[in-house]
Image 1 (cartoon, rainbow, N blue to C red):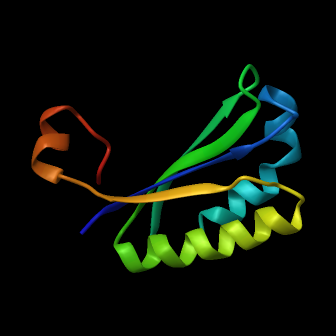
Image 2 (cartoon, helix red, strand yellow):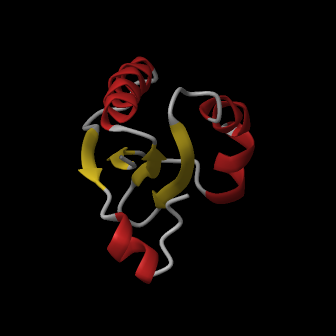
Length: 101
């Protein structure tokens, strides 16, 4: 069952194009994570937040990624990491054109 992972954390920047340049290699590496289908990167310069919305093939892959990613972010000095895992209702998401594969 497709599983959505929502992650956000306190982040003071950089944002936008500068963030994209700085984290390009990380973004490319995420494509190789087991069970990962896609990621949408999120940022709020106003609220000083970074994060992402991910779609995984199953809850086990999402949980494993959240644990690994939280440890990685902690090593980078990131604090207040929040992660939530949700089941995806495919029938309703399809009606609303959700990109669920």
